[in-house]
Length: 637
Image (cartoon, rainbow, N blue to C red; front, side, top):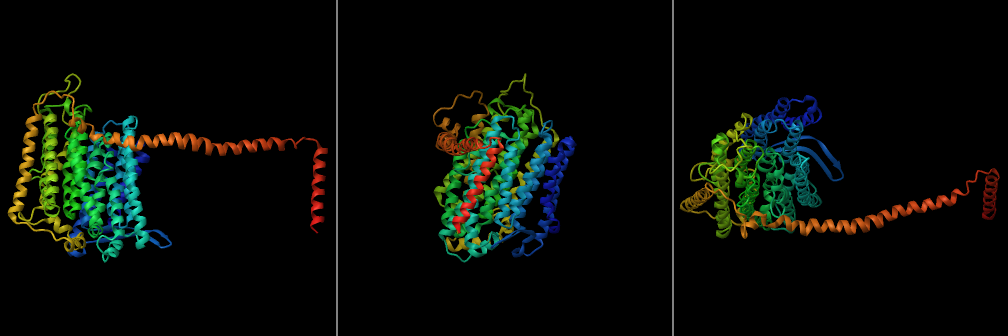
């Protein structure tokens, strides 16, 4: 199937062009939605075929390089536009196209009647095209092309309902904050090319393989790449754009901000795992930032009342879990949690969209309650997703989160483990606060204006499929005491070199089976206790007094946005207005331009006096000119 692999990116691009140029002429929701969905589903089928092709190869040879054309050939830079297919890229490829297809189908029902229906699917296809280039690129520059492409697509999708001011503000915030991260990525690319003469990832990793541990150059490159990862994957300090991005339509939240785009930073670090293994200082930074982000975002989620904001901060926290795994050198575990998170978080976002759809665009969970009897499919699937993210066995989130906790305990120590375990408890608590306030308790909505109802089949069928994946997806990564870890074996060749380096630096401490079982029991008990406490507390809550004290701090998200506005936005705006506009622009730049204009105007007024219209004057000037020329020639001789 790899010979047809070029279609996997070409087809979504065609879908983007069809809906972009002819969407209004087609003027049929079913046709536009079906075309866009099929042009994502066909790449998924090609990806499945390529997966079997890879599985038929020897484990250490599972890679396919597809060279399409010479892209840049100038000076020392000879870059081919090529794709690199291996167990890591094909795994993410199937997640993007598989879940992307389900979200496309869901969007047909969710966006029904929207005046920008075709445009929305145009932007969705553009996003899929860019995201596939990001995960398939064989060089940093091809990855960066997709990296910027998803940034553009997310800007268009977040601000899709542009007539609402807050959506435009959210889109601009996401765009600007991602540019900060992109600056780090670009600088890393410049340093890689300047020092290693290549932008091909495999060539770069091959050249650093023999370098020493914690070489300053490698530390700097790793940290700069991580800055880019922080921007895309919403880690401290570049995380505030993601919750605001919930202003876009809910399918956008599910596709971009749960399952695909925000995992781009995870993919970048995992793809360059050897670099981080050779730079333990940078890897420690990844671990610390991951823990800090996971804890901070989880505590903020405890006091949010917007159903999508709770899930947004949950996403930031879960991305922190993935970086924690990367920071402990457990690269395959990070990918494992990325996959399970894609299942249950896409389910939860789409479930929230179903609730919002059934509640006539209401998003405040304090104004809901008792919805389970009106929306049975949405409730059951949302409940499964909540159990999965909380780490309840045997659902998918249990296996990946438990593996992260074990690796932190083994490789980082008891204090980081306690922080991560506490964050896992917070996760279960805020998720079942969300479940209790939304689906249980007294009905707190106005029955005269709101009539809850179940969503159409185009929305509920994707929920059911994702619920099944959330339930069984974890069995691909069983703990060793339960059976073979299929995913670890599958990804082993990708991280073999990095794992070899890590084994020489600090060999992983093996624990007795009893220790591992105790850790599993502790995580399950903590999650179950959090669920029970949360459910009992909130399922009967009817009044919602104003938050005070630290609860107010959490509700206001630690005032990080206000801090950024004061430290950067307002100060830069004042600097721009007072100095750059009024002084530099008006007085200096405009002064020079206008001054030149005035000088030439005065000069022209003086010279214009020569043009009298009298022939005798012109004759006199001509004779004078001839005399001057003759005198010049005579004296020069």
